[in-house]
Amino acid sequence: MPGRILIIDDETQITRVLRASLTAQGYSVRTANDPEEGIQIYREWAPDLVITDLMMPTMTGVDVCRAIRATAATPILVLSVRDHERSKVEALDAGADDYVTKPFSNHELLARIRAHLRRAPERSAATIEAGDFVIDAIAHSITVQGIPIHLTPKEFELIVHLARHEGKVVTHRALLTAIWGGNSIHQPEYLRVFIGQLRKKLEAETGKQYIQTEPWVGYRFVAEGWSDTPLI
Image (cartoon, rainbow, N blue to C red; front, side):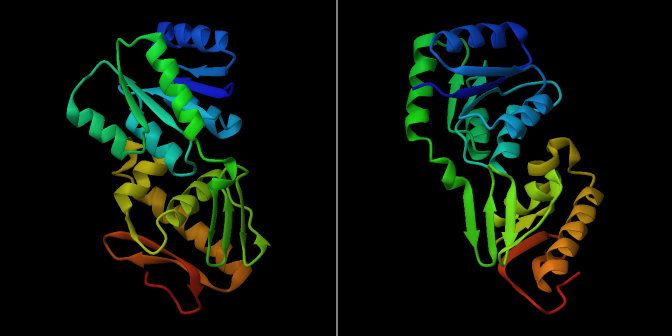
């Protein structure tokens, strides 16, 4: 079952060994020793499965999971030398599909990869259809009331994350962590600026509002929209 696999691990020896092993099995493999670079490769390459280390210097594997889950349902395997229940739960809660503790056997890892690729949803499952919106998280395209909307990469990530929680309040902290990583939770100005830009673009094309402010808490996405002035 060949496919494309992205490996994100700050240990070059790990990425080198895994690349050799997976390439020998017919997989197309790309690696990144920096998690931010890995996320960028993910967005450009759209792999079929991601393997990420849990503990890395600049971003954790949990941050990587959240960033990927903001836009897609790609299977994610998390690797870690830590075998504590809390770290496993944290990774799984962030969107990981599986957790493998180092050291692990090559046969075990290959078996888990095959199992997750068999269960992986079709690419079309990444399409979100809700209310006025059709969003293709893989193609990075969005239409509202049938009108194509041009968004920056961060604006797109933001609307996808909100749309995946349609009708529910998403906290400031959850949005900041999902879009900008765990180190950004004390910089809410990022969120205010991008929410403002996103609202202007959507309203300019449709005359409707779709993102409601929940004061001091977060934002709620309403896919049907409304014409009244939203809470600010």
